Amino acid sequence: YVLPMICNSSPTSRCCCFGIEVDGTLTAWILKYLDGPLGMLFVEENHRRKGYAKALVLHVMDFLKAENIKINCSNSDGNNNKQLHAQTFAYIVDDNEASEKLFYDLGWQRFSSADWVGFTSTS
Image 1: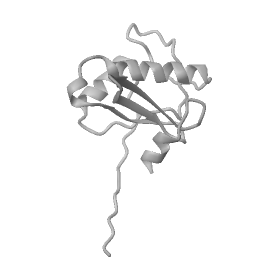
Image 2 (image 1 turned 45 degrees about the vertical axis):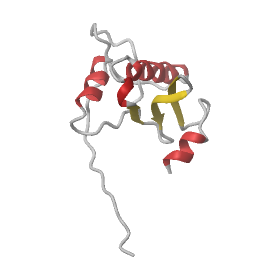
Image 3 (image 1 turned 90 degrees about the vertical axis):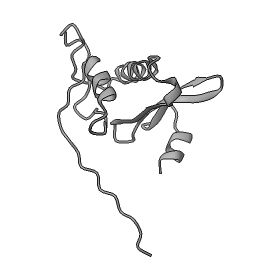
């Protein structure tokens, strides 16, 4: 499900993936799902703490603003100058403190929790 979504996405589609390449290798990425939320923010371990995740989230926020998708978040100085739509949110796995801090530092707020359910075939 996810790989075809990444490979067939473009910035003009409702679903898209933004990434950073280093020496021709994809090293960081984030997805915008078909129904609007962000997820799968990931940076390869040997490229962490270089600002790639922050750069990606800021880029996606600019993309959303350019698409007139509004978000409600405050920037670090407390001014509410960014507007994100209520449907725009990011999936962050519980206890992923680095990701939680990144989004918090960029003005996002936690508003809900989700439970994930997985199924495996018994046959």
